[in-house]
Length: 277
Length: 334
Image: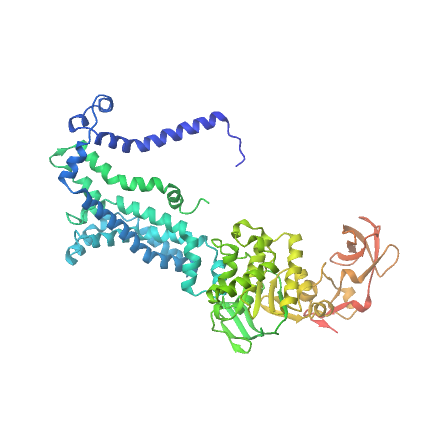
């Protein structure tokens, strides 16, 4: 756009953007601040919390003493990576077929898949719970991996589909003319060209699985509980322990937050579904 | 070798018959151009030969062997696409090497052929660049290089020049023609531009709505178009087609006279008209003339120095030996 933007306008935009950014980030900052306080300080007025109390790591120690962070952490890693990997295994061929050999009803199938995301999960909680109970999948990492894969599959397929669609069909035809088999075509041409898109799909899916709380809380008890359950266990019937709750939250979100920071560029592309070029 | 025979080849998409059963023979070493307006099925026909589309019925033989059911990779043909279709993540060198890599050509042989192709196509300095860093003409040369190194039975070109600007197009046209003279390999070239067809082809196949209207050398088509469609399509500017009383004088439904076969005079001639728009090309001038009693204005060619202007009276005389006659069905009358 060749529209002249005045200097005042630019300053205003910067201020608004900065404020919005701060507002969005504030809860996370506040969690970090509170996690570094003692339990008594944590329930004082906000300004007092910030300025007139000491800093301590004791909440982190207390949290780790009460429940094993690393067990939950490894559960989270296994479940989010596992569900992403499983999802890709199914989604790559599916998206491939829909992008390159579309049938009459491909669009309908895509819309139908998306529509399953509009269903409130609680609507299928009871049947899934019963199936899990009867098949012995309750509180197992395998079961949870499977459910999260199913939950996110429509998004993975949609994202890959849009990325594959951006790859001109003529390039794949050229590969075919050049003597490439279907396998060569996928390995040497399609995959390298789709890597940016696949990377953002993988990242987004790991984040979604990592943060997923509804199914992880309802289908696990102790063995397979990931970090979401770890946080939830600190809002306990014994009362609210803000400092410990915050410390647990910091420990749970830190890995994914750091990963997000390092992969911002890929993520933005992923979240806009390849619309911005 | 690259002899290609199409026997009763038909293509339908669902209920829509794009190419009704068609026979065509392409001899080894020929430069054949498929030409026709957009949507005439010329690209589809090329893709059928390439194996990128399946035939609905009929058979395609390459060097006497039935290739109808073979996948593109097994047909031994190379294709150059309109969009160049280079692999954007590979360097020029790797792009050119790709078909050899797929065919498991030994490394040294690959190097040798890449060097030769790069030399022939002026790409030596660009071998380590990515396609994104090249101009349109260079990209097209890489695409041609990728086709050459395979040493295919035939080259297929799908409107390869239509993404280039006019000046570059003329240059590339020459390069491809030279390449054909040098390699003597069969080439099938699809274009909607009849100038490309006329300048490059040994044999032109004129298509309309999936039907072959005429097959012949450029001059055959120019001199003896089989019907009105070919008459109007081949030649630039277009042949003037005149119906009505004037045609009846020649015992025809329609008569045709090419702009270059009508002589122009300021004071005497068969037809009298007024000059409309004139196009000065320097060497030639094209006048659009409104002739009394004709439904359509005529286009005529005159020398570059003819001094006639908008609104002037002009006399036109067609060369009687070069008038084309067509019947009510649009077919040529000898």
